[in-house]
Length: 388
Ligand code: ADP
Image (cartoon, rainbow, N blue to C red; front, side):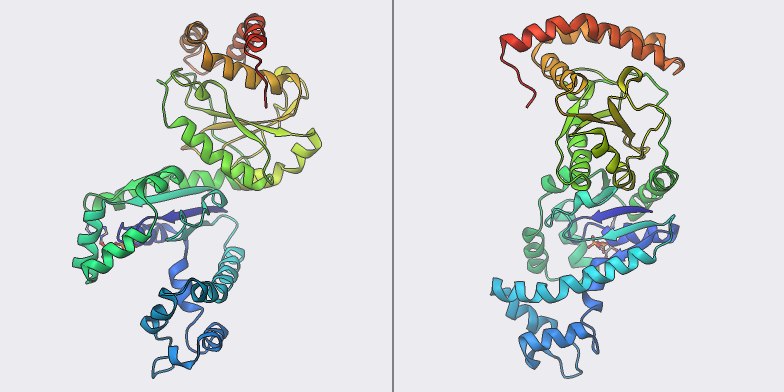
């Protein structure tokens, strides 16, 4: 199963995208719809709300009088919390039920308007944000939904900012154009990313990384690494996760593969996270458990074909653990050494462009690191560097 969080500001086109993905076969869990369903007439939810706020919040037909309830909770944080205390657990229960009932190979789209505001992003294998400019959203809400303009603006102002949404978006769907354009993006997302990602997680595999091509340094790499790290932290109960490797060194061209180092206290601890990490989208890579063939780490890969990543679980204080951090910090601090290393990388990228014999490419790099280690160590003692 793949769990995808879908969000976006009101009027951005979230429901439009969710509907299209559902047509392709996704299981849709709509948080807004559930929040309404759990307080429909005859539900224990509505009974609890009446208990808390009195029968005045009912309309003559016995259904919830939403404007009246809204007026009550709008002015009081305490009343708002009281309402949330009733509705949220019920929505959570229904969500868990729908997840439990979804097929093993389901792609679940969880449409959550407040995903960013609630910091839910790390709970998903992937977060998709639908975006349209504020003015465009106001226009759509007024024209197609008949919302008063002031209401539309007030709601938009109360939600997360574009910058906050960008920080959690693994996929950014720009819905500034026509509906057909965003639907085509949703189609491509489904076919090129969600379907293979789901299969990879279910079958515990990852896409082959047989490509040594170098890309210019991408300032998005640290942000992408941070999103993966947040997922890993969540499933490992807060272990230290560092962005390491070439993509962690600003200015350095690199293969488009993020390396992350997870600090564990023992390999047994690393093994205990094999399954949770797999479910989070990072299956174990069983045939390669160590650096240079030694049993010094556990190795996972990203199953997301749209974001390749190597996840190295290494024991705190071991040599390889320390070197990964040292080389990163040393290369960040030393422009000449960066240039020197880049030269080696360019040579490797040319020699191994076919993607064959990548093992030899790794050996060539190891040799460079062996030769560079004394220089890195001398920098470390000069600057009183420490890995913590
Ligand atoms: P959300 O679920 O994010 O609030 P919707 O998908 O309901 O947004 O879209 C808001 C309104 O804008 C809907 O009436 C929808 O039909 C319309 N809409 C969505 N995308 C576009 C677009 N690209 N151009 C014009 N109108 C759109």
